[in-house]
Amino acid sequence: MSEKQEYVPSVIKAEEMNPKFKYEISKMHGAEKLMLCFQCGTCTADCPISRFSDLYRPRKIARMVQLGLKDRLLSDDALWLCSTCFTCVDHCPQNVEIAGIVRVLRNLTIKERGVMPLVFKELASNILKAGYVYEIPESRHKKRTEQGLPQLPKPNLEDVAKIFEVTGSSKILENVKTFEKVKS
Amino acid sequence: MPEPKYLLFLGCVIPYRLSSYEISARKILGKLGVELVEMPEFNCCGFPMDPINHYLMLTLAARNLCLAEKQNLNILTLCNGCFSILNETNKMLKEDKKLREKVNGYLKEIGMEFKGTIGVKHLVHVLSEDVGFEKVKDAVKKPLTNLRVAQHSGCHIVRPAKYVDHGDDPENPTMLKNLIRLTGAECLDYMDETECCGNPIIGVNEEVPFQMAKEKLDHVRAVKAQALITVCPFCHMMYDLNQPRIERAFNEKFGIPVLHYPQLLGLAMGFTPEELALNELRVKPSELLSRTQQEDS
Image (cartoon, rainbow over all chains, first blue to last red; front, side, top):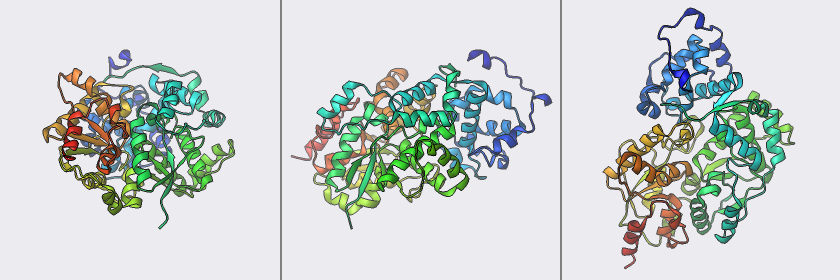
């Protein structure tokens, strides 16, 4: 991912701005209040990730969406640094769900750019294979019996696969490219 | 009042690597008269799929809710992440007709329909609200008066606040603190108690979560807490399983045992460390156990 972070122009050119982007995002579940953000910066000030990262700034993300800087946003690795603690959501004086906006941008990055962190792809393929995000090894099942724990129920993999299919997730995952880690 | 009865939603992380949490939770709930029904055919709550596709997460979560509706039982979770996703999805689908119709469209393909007839609670809510402080207090046979501990409730049990209505303050959560005090142990305040553990991003970046966890352990050590108490497998992994790695990364020695709350309560109720699977913790609580045993003599 390093090539993406090498050069970020500091000046925003008019042609980079997509005026329709904010309306597109505002229609998505969880990002409806995007336009209420008046850039007070409470989200960034209270964000536990921003304290330790030079790159993740929720206020900046909200402003970039309002300005329609779609290409910059969807190629910004920092999107993957939100830990979904929801402090920003609870502290926002305008009730903007910043974490929801970040999630919408993650979904859009995967759908439109076809890239995502490897870990999520692995978790998804585990769910398809096992119903859980991990494939629980036979030794674990045996140990449960030894520990007097009830056997884990058999997952319904047909249902799970169907859910991936009808929500369009199987198709998204089919050709997606992955990257491993992001800088902070 | 009839004994509380719940459908136990185990999630993925607990059966995969933290059976100590499940073992101890089953022990204490059994003794406190909470009946647990095993949940058939459940799948991942949906939480880790939200970054990929919001509707995948919602539908996976809704399928679990439908399974509970079929049995007409409320769900009990041990994991903050599972609680958050199932509770939030349940509330959103109940309140938002358009969203419910969309998700029900997907569920129709597997012959299910979300109706909105059940509720979702975390272990902490069941202990505080259904079992009640009096009954928990009565069950304490060996008060842990020699212990001074700190708590980390975690984020998803209190946030986003608009979906959680159990009366706890996200800025200063006290529900777990009060439950800890019932064991006889002192629950210490420390700096930045509500700070996130950072675990959800560890798969994409280790530096930030490690710094966050290191700072948490610093603050817990500063008040001389003898253990950190958690109620979420993700937070637990961050502070227990990863503690040796954090120690190496920052050239520090913490040695702070991290107990699942039911292990602490279980000790106070008179269960043995073996019964509560305390030997499964990465940071061995030997000093803590010798303190509790001093109370025996």
